Structure formats: structure tokens, C-alpha cells
Amino acid sequence: MSTRKSLLVIGGCGYIGSHMVSCLIDAGHQVTVLDDLSTGFSDSLLGGELIVGNFGCRETLDAIFSKSKYDGVLHFASLIQVGESVAQPATYYQNNVANTLTLLSAMVDHKVGPLVFSSTAAVFGEPSYVPIDEVHPRQPMNPYGMSKYMVEAMLQDFDSAYGLRSVSLRYFNAAGADPQGRIGERHNPETHLIPLALRALLDESSNFKVFGDDYDTPDGTCIRDYVHVADLAEAHLCALNYLWQGGATSAFNLGSGSGFSVREILDTIRTVVGKPVRVETVSRRAGDPARLVADSALAMTQLGWTPKYSSLETIVRHAWQWEQVRHRK
Ligand code: UDP
Image 1: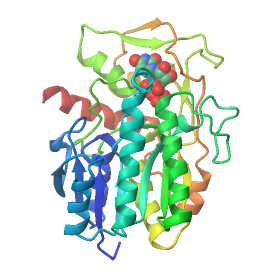
Image 2 (image 1 turned 180 degrees about the vertical axis):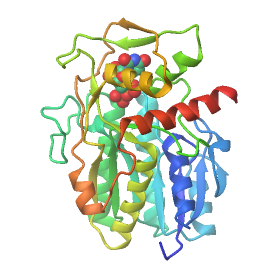
Image 3 (image 1 turned 90 degrees about the vertical axis):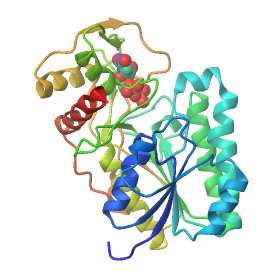
Image 4 (image 1 turned 120 degrees about the vertical axis):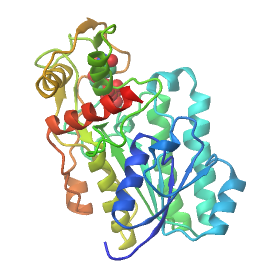
């Protein structure tokens, strides 16, 4: 990368945001992070300047956009728990939709752009076929997925009316950690398979719970598409370059293209770590489709994205390296 750009990363202290900051710094860019630290951690930042504040506050955004000029914005600041979104839709629509509307309006008024937006496979709902490509119908099944769907729709309209160009990246299952072991997944509460299964190895008192083994899949457990967080970050860099070269507002699915069942993940953990996770099978978790696998061909051809860490062993090895660091913290 020859030209140094200045970027605002909203939600840069979270899991994917912090890996993004690291990726941008490695690419030679100048980074400012806006994060209210409600779910992120300031010590997850491996560089850049941190502004502690809420991205839904227009005064904060006016101050930031008046003080410095940005060549682009990356927006990671979302609430992400499906169950919580069902119980508290107002909170989800406020944070994920209304606050994002405030951000988009401020970007238009200050003539800042383009934008890369964190979207999700949850915009598709229950898949009618897999792998899921970009033309698959979007029928979100919960307020979380709906909130991302609504922002994707707003982004199309903001381009048509105001010329704000953007790329929405729909993540399938973000997983893994910094290959150097400095940062990784730190959700509170943690709900994701790989960190929970690894923690069951570190904490002798807990079993890992498999949510259902009666799905219509070869081993009865759900199949997901796990994509390394460092590859996700790299896809954002590709999206920025695409937009800087004049690319049109679009959405892309990001996955590895391979599906693995919960049992296959547990088997891989056993191989990588060298001991088995103690498991118990419990009933299904509400709202879990049997299979979610991405077709990422469009991101590869249009954005020039090439995932580097597509082996599941590598994803689990990096996650395990990080879990041991996190456990000692
Ligand atoms: N899962 C599980 N036990 C857990 C957490 C997750 O069996 O403690 C399963 C879950 O039902 C799903 C898969 O693991 O089939 C991935 O779930 P995760 O929450 O990591 O990501 P999601 O696919 O919900 O985004």
C-alpha cells in the first residue's frame, strides 16, 4: 500500500474492530478509533488514537469530523446478541439503526466517505439454499438481523440521494484471533462456540453444551462457516480499496465457503490442543438454522479478497493461543 490514508474506526475496541485496527496499522494507515467502551476494551487497541464516546451522539461526530479529515469510515459498533435483540428490540433498533442513521447524516453533512459497514449472515434468516450467495432472499428472523437489514437498505438510499458510497460486509462466523496472540475474542457474556469450548478446557468445572444433535445434518449438529478474523479485517481493506477506486455501493458475503458441524469443531479442538472437550448435549438453541455456509465468490472476484487462514486447524490454533493469554490476564 503506497498511500497513507486516515481512517475512523467506529467500535475499534471490539473483537473484529481491534483486528481491523491492527490490519490498518500494518498497512501503514493512520487510525482514529471512536468507541464508548460499552462492550470493547481499550487495551485491545494495538495502535491508533482512541476517542471514548458514543457514535450516536451528533455533537461528538461533529467535533471529530470538524477536527480532522478522514478518507473513510469503518463501522463495527453493533449490539450482536440474537436472544437479547428479541427481548430488547428497542435497544437494538436504537443502537444499530437510529445511531447509525445519525452517523450517516453526519458523514453526509461533513462530506466524509466512503463507509465499510459490518453486516451479518443474519440478514438472510433461515436459508432456502446453501451456500448462500448475494442474491439469496433476505428475510431476517430476529431484531438483530433486521437491524442490519435496515441499515443495508438505508445505505442504498444514502448513495442514491447523497452519493455516500459504501460496502456492507456480511460476516458468517468470525473466529480465531491475532496470529501473534496479542488480541482475540473477548465478549461478555461469551456465547460463541470456539471460545466457550476452549474455556471448558481451561476451566475444569464446566462442560461445553452442544445445542442439539437432532438437526438434519450428517452428525446431527449445526453446520457453520468459520472465517478467520484476520481474513475478515483484510476483506475490509479490500473493500476500502474498491471504494477508493470508485466501486459502487454493494454488499458481499464473507465466509470460507466450507461448513463444519459443532462436532467437527470439537474434533479439531481435540487434535489441536491434544485433549478432548468435556461435552453434554442439551436442547436446541432457539433460532439456530441447521446450516449456514457462505458463497464468497463475489468478494473474491470483485474485491480481490483472498483469505489466508482458511484452515480450521489454524483458526482453532490461534483461538487457543489467545484463550491461554486471556485466561492469565
Ligand atoms: N453452539 C453450541 N454450544 C454453545 C455455543 C454455540 O452448541 O455453547 C452452537 C450453536 O448452536 C451453533 C454453532 O455452535 O450451531 C455456532 O454458534 P455461535 O454462537 O458460535 O455462532 P452463530 O452461528 O450463532 O452466529
